[in-house]
View (cartoon, rainbow, N blue to C red):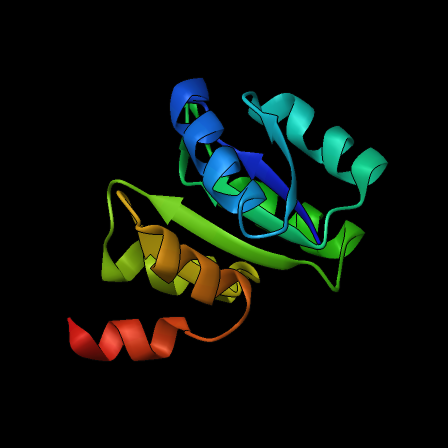
Length: 125
């Protein structure tokens, strides 16, 4: 399983990558939105963890091209600014899940493996 982490906070991306490598993922990180699609097309990840806020860019804008390029990849939007509106928009654009930062390893792993979904999380809020 190949996980691409698109996150502008390189320290946070490295922590997530370390945690997910322990779970059997091969991980790559990218810190810039403008390079993310190119990296995804070259590396062909099976899973993508995408930050909502990427410096001055929005991770939401990457969902459609990522989904078009990698239709079978599991795309999870991760944000420190969770809201119902952004969750709905992420799902509308093609994300598989939506998680709020900080996320624990168990929750992240369950989302990556498809064991939780946005609908279940939304009902709790």
